[in-house]
Image 1 (spheres, helix red, strand yellow):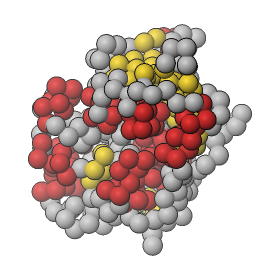
Image 2 (cartoon, helix red, strand yellow):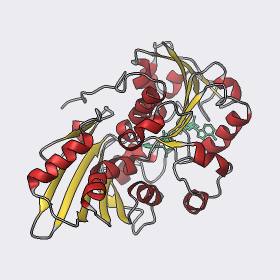
Image 3 (cartoon, helix red, strand yellow):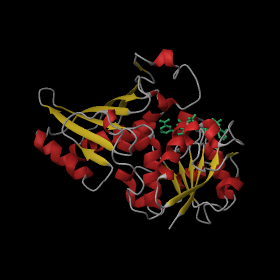
Image 4 (cartoon, helix red, strand yellow):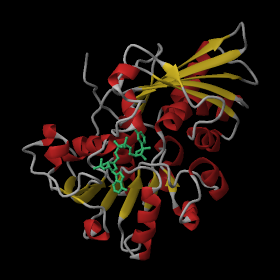
Length: 341
Ligand SMILES: NC(=O)c1ccc[n+]([C@@H]2O[C@H](COP(=O)([O-])OP(=O)(O)OC[C@H]3O[C@@H](n4cnc5c(N)ncnc54)[C@H](OP(=O)(O)O)[C@@H]3O)[C@@H](O)[C@H]2O)c1
């Protein structure tokens, strides 16, 4: 089986990461790409590194882009995807079998009021209940065969992988999550958050005290209050989530390790490791490395998870979701070894 795949937003960071992964995928042909301002141009004009690969030119985002596609990835700013998915549904594209995987936030929150508070009123709130939240480690069975998949945010992915065993098995009822992101997390549009002089050799917290839009997504996922503080770190890509929780009964170090091993034994993209993982260990992959530690003096468990914000945090997880939705081997086409050193 060869899937005919399109990528909307191919001139952006998650879009080009999708291209990188999908060009190498053994059961995919990339047949359609769209851009916003870059529409009408060869994709190599946006990404000179892609010259000579025979990729289609960037088209405007339109229903015609989707004719004959099996899978469409939406790597668009939040708000743009929701309206377009509404058009796709009205045109019968999902009913005919098109699978849509949205890398943005438009279909992640189940409650329209929570969505409205974080992102503004949803143009198609009726579609929120149809979307499956694409965290395979939590919702693998629902992702299989799904037509509309909300790919999780990067911070929620890393935080959930670190914290879910603490909530599920140890009864944590409040999680503190301190997280770092590389600068590509802000997207490719220039702004003060990604100027070289204002991001290199420095780090800063932002979205503090519950004000970041990923807070409700993380709380929806964990089902407990979360004090989430993101930090911008001087690296192009990569993400760390370090979470702390008081738990009902403090496990021994061996019990804690066994708990994480059991939670992820059946999940090929999560690796439980012995020492605090580095973002460099997963760079360019769709994998997460996670480690957990007991602090008996304070009755606290600390777990730390490394992902690539563009990999497991976006495009890599989206391809993982495509594999599940389309019945392919779960890890098909996904690089497992990072660029080292
Ligand atoms: N960056 C990350 O680490 C990350 C991680 C997880 C999730 N996400 C989410 O993934 C989505 C894409 O993020 P990104 O970082 O790839 O953003 P980006 O680099 O800014 O790229 C956005 C893409 O969308 C296109 N676009 C913008 N407005 C459009 C419009 N009105 N109509 C059609 N196309 C339009 C842009 O085209 P032109 O540039 O040609 O105008 C570009 O191709 C966002 O929702 C983001 O929140 C990002």
